[in-house]
Structures are given as structure tokens and as C-alpha cells.
Length: 139
Image (tube, rainbow, N blue to C red):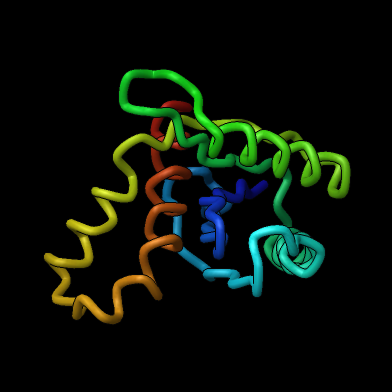
């Protein structure tokens, strides 16, 4: 069994997958879309990854505000999660993703990734952090 982690953004979705033993998360891809409302190709690509990696559950980053309130991004994420669940039939777990983007940024700085190249990696790294947080909670 593998679990997929997703970081859903307005232009991209970062994707990560667990190892079969559910210990570690690895980044696999950043899915880009042409406009915020165009989700059909994004959902199709996620389905391909689910089959390729034999995913049985999805952890979707849930972007709460720092004061624990839920804003517009939470609603869009919840809608995306419902679409994913309907399309894949898999369980979707909403996981608090506060500070994952800041952590991803710090990881990229420490890794020496140039500022102009960071957007390419940020969402995939955030997906890894979301999934790893969930995996750590299981143990």
C-alpha cells in the first residue's frame, strides 16, 4: 500500500508518494495547469500517478490560516478533494499544511537552489512535507 500526498495550489499541484512501508515520503512531480479552473487534465494526471504507484489513499494539504480559521483556499481545496474522491473512489484525508511552504522554502535555501528556480520545486517539496507529517502521525 502507498499513500499519495498532494499540495493543491492555484496554478500547480505538488505530488509525493510514500514508500510501501509507509515510513518515508518522496516527491514525484509538480503538475502545472494553464488556469485555476482547468482541473480535468490535473485530475487525469493524478489518476495516472495513482495507478503507476498503486496508491490506496490520498492526503491533501489543507491550508488553514495561522489562527486556525478557514479561508477561501480551504473551500477550494475541499472542493478539489471532493472531485478527487468522486473520480478515484479513494479516501481523501485533509491534512493541516500550515508552515509547509515556509519549510519548503527553507529546505531549498539550505540545498542551494537558486531563487529563480525555487517555484519549480516548492509544491513538490510541500507535498513531501504534508505526506511525511501524516506518515509520522501513524507511528
